[in-house]
Length: 119
Image 1 (cartoon, rainbow, N blue to C red):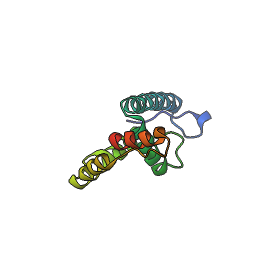
Image 2 (image 1 turned 180 degrees about the vertical axis):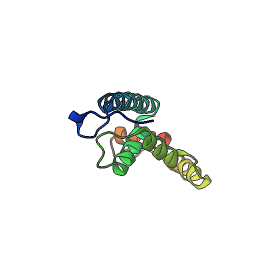
Image 3 (image 1 turned 30 degrees about the horizontal axis):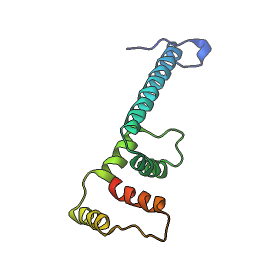
């Protein structure tokens, strides 16, 4: 199909402004949907997981103004896809070997125990 050219646009198609507007609207719609998807992903994560994945995403997209859903999914999947038997054993061992030290304040110690269970 032949394009109609306008002399005032110096060789650009006459409908290029409308194409640009449609493309900008599509990009804005995509950005909004992407932001909503990231928000939904974040809402379903526990705080320690959210913090860990956020750190990984920021490291992967250090120069990005916005962090994209695909990076969130990839980093979450890479970090939490499977847990090895040795990791399970290590967590069980930490929980079984945990004890409160009567000479120290219990709050930080209980926070450490909670961290073991959050893993």
